[in-house]
Length: 387
Image (cartoon, rainbow, N blue to C red; front, side, top):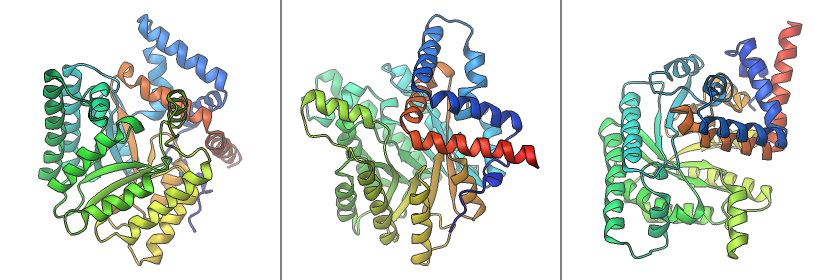
């Protein structure tokens, strides 16, 4: 059993100042009203070009982001690697609409792959499909809506960007994650992800699709892609619980269609753990990254490795958590010699704000997560005081 309660290991590389900042942040985010007020004020101040960026950068940005550029993120990369925790550089600008923004996201993703190719400390790259094209275009593709001439041109440009990323990943032997998004554009993402797997996962899994297990159809999807891939290509999968739960429920209700996500958390947990077992049972042709902040799921995967006689550092199997969260999982897994990585978002503050707001909203809504983060921080502060 892994000792996730070893908080000395979890916070070994955090200064007293780091701990105090984290304490104040998570304390604020545990209060829904305060959290909403602070994020609203931050957005308002940025729109008015008030001098609030230094405050954001020294607090919530420093907790959850690596830096404004890849170069600025190097300090975070090196610090994590001292504990043998890899970095997944994630250019986190989202919700963009211009070709210039799409090409900037493309350039950043390509740069992150080049960086990973020469860095043992960076095991994966990642991109968000809505960083490369309009959300509305993915919706049309998803729904098989007839495309106009301009739509068709944009679609071809989007597909070319995705292919450029996956080809470079293949050429540089760097694994790349394709992030999951809302259910009403996910079929379009699944389709191009599978196309890229067929094209580039001929010798091993380099292209990974992301499965959100809060969706009630994802275990079925997992089994279907395994069936389609047999004797054809290797499958790369990042397993997460999901990032848009309340939004999915609200949309299904407002548009009067069957809710696509589990409304009982235990069902999400069950499907997540089932997916872990399925991946390990098919490890001869599957590579898996378990993106989880759930101790039970992390322990289940560790147990599965032992049951199947797999090495703790088998490069087909990774654990991953977000920077600034669940350090008691990341650092204790790494200390026990498992492959561990942290998602490290980077980018200009104004571009990364949607990501930071989502972190605040997620953490406000997950009482158990907040309770654990705060409990661990308070316990470590007390341990240091008594040491």
